[in-house]
Length: 123
Image (cartoon, rainbow, N blue to C red; front, side):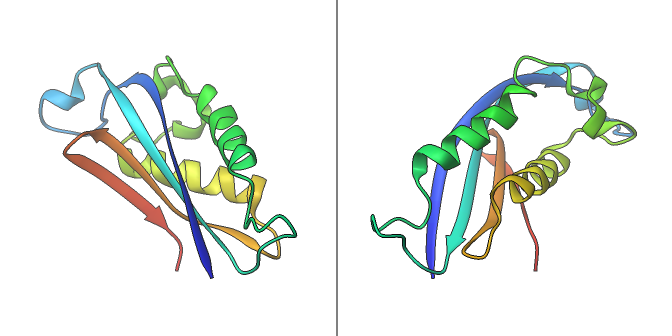
């Protein structure tokens, strides 16, 4: 098995719902996003998945979040747009776009600061 990872980012505002504290107020982050995929085999070029494809699909998805108020977006209707819920959403969407017989989205980690992140993966 091979693991491949990209790192990208987006900026957006949110507020945590049902939270007792400062983060219940409107605020923003410059989120970093790590996407890790696994590949069982390499293609003729020696690639599990072309990084160009992985970056393009991830950045296309992040464009729907970038410079938005996350609480108003459909994926977070009725949910607090926490780093945990953002990572789960990104994992699900990227899995639909990228998973095939060879490649699987493994982990999606969302960093809301240099010191705090949440990772979503499926067992």
